[in-house]
Amino acid sequence: MSKDPAFLFYPNDYIGGTMGMTFEEKGAYIELLMLQFNRGHMTSQVIGQVIGQLWVKLQDKFKIDEKGLYYNERLDLEIEKRKTFVQSRFNNLLGKNQYTKKEAHKTNHMTSHMENENENVIVNRNRNKKGAKNKKFKPPTIEEVKQYFKESGYSEESAITAFDYYTDLDWHDKNDNPVLNWKLKMRTVWFKDEHRSQEPTDFSPLNDIIKTLKK
Image 1 (cartoon, helix red, strand yellow):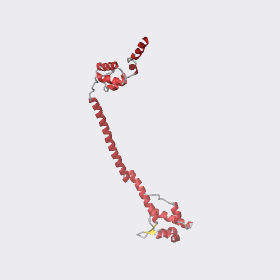
Image 2 (spheres, helix red, strand yellow):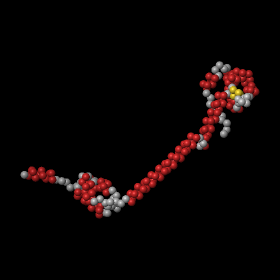
Image 3 (tube, one colour):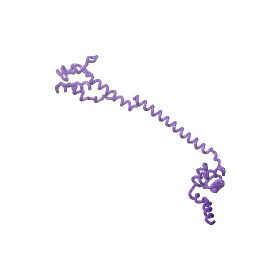
Image 4 (cartoon, one colour):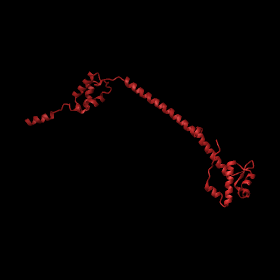
C-alpha cells in the first residue's frame, strides 16, 4: 500500500496550540509538521537547516524518541489513527475485516437457512399435493345433501336434483372434472339465483287467506 498522502488537521486545536506565536513561528511550526509527516522523526541538524534559530521557540512542541530524533506526539498519533482507518477500509474490500467476516458468516448462515426453509416449503407443498391426489373422494349420501340444502335455505327437491345430477356423472362436473368438495360445488353452482328462481313457492298461507275470504 502506498504512503497515505493526508492526515486529519484540527483547526481549533492548532489555533489553541499556537496562541501567542508570531506568524513567522507559526509558519516554521507548520513546516516542521510537514517535514515529520513526509520523512518521519527528525534530527536536530535537519531541523536547524529548515527553520534555523526559530527552533529555540518551538522546541517544547516536540519530544525525543529512543534514537534521539525529534517528533510531534500529536502528529504521530494522527498519522497512526489515519493509517489504522485506511487499513480497515482496505480490509473491508478484501473481506478481511472482523465485521465483514461476521457479516459474511451471517449472510452465509441466513442463505443456508433460507435455502433450507425454501426446501421445506417445496417438500411440504409436494406432500400436500400428493396427499390431496391420494385422498380418495367420498361421495355424500342423499341425506347429507338434503340436510345441507335445508340448512342453506333450499328445498329438498333441489337437493335431490343436484344429487342425481352428480351421481349420474360419477361425481364429475359437466367438464369432466372430479368433484373433490361437494359442498363447495353446491355453493358455487346450485345455490345460484337461477336455481333459486326455480325453487317451488309455498302458497299455503295465501291459500288459507283465500279460503277464509270465500267463506
